[in-house]
Image (cartoon, rainbow, N blue to C red; front, side, top):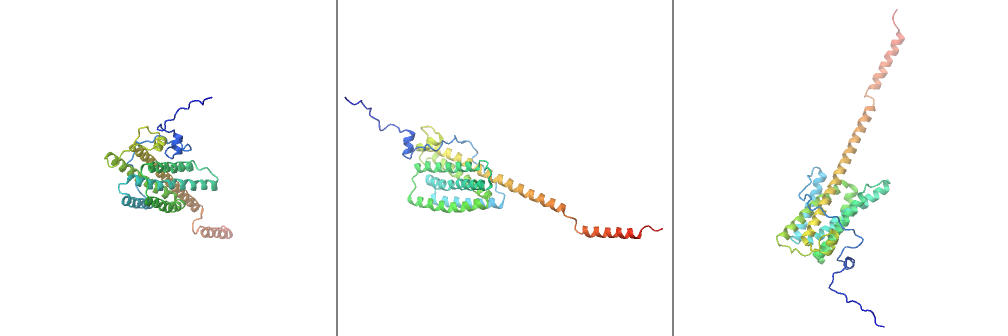
Length: 287
């Protein structure tokens, strides 16, 4: 009996999303696609630094920006790779810190843990996307490892001792990320960077069109960074309100405590008055 005819497969046919994910080029099944980013979000908004800690955070961000400009120049893909390896750290540190805090206090975290974990995953997906665009060199990989170790220790300490400043720092860092991706877009529009096809993992993650280009990817990533900027500045502002409220409550308690204290010298005056009354009672009215 002859075997049934087996149709010959076309090796040049497009692979399924699962097969692409297995090859490391598509979106893994356990990562949900990103909602369509709001590319019309305000990309020029900037937080006005007011407190000393704000200025400290801004100085640290400017220092990192200066180092990045000197090292990478106009190698935008390489800059993005290193930037995203750093940007993916704070969300995970913050989520772990708030997770443990929720356990210790035995209270809900109001969604902060999940929000920060989603932020960390989103930054990691940025990295996985740009790795397909620009392959990091050995020197860049070594720099990534050293930077990640140093930044992990620095940010963990910062978040432990001053959560508000840590969120402000990340908000300012995301502002610089928005500027970096804006320069990336300008370079693509000017023809300095080739507008290649978008990686498959980016098409799957951001639900981009099949003919999406690198410019579409950078627009989506920049919109994500603007969202992270707003979230972290919002967290810092909320913590500002909490700190101000606690200070006001402490001031009110101090006022109430002082109001309950007797007036200085009141006891002596009261004793003297009672003694006078006793003497007057002994003398009695004159007949």
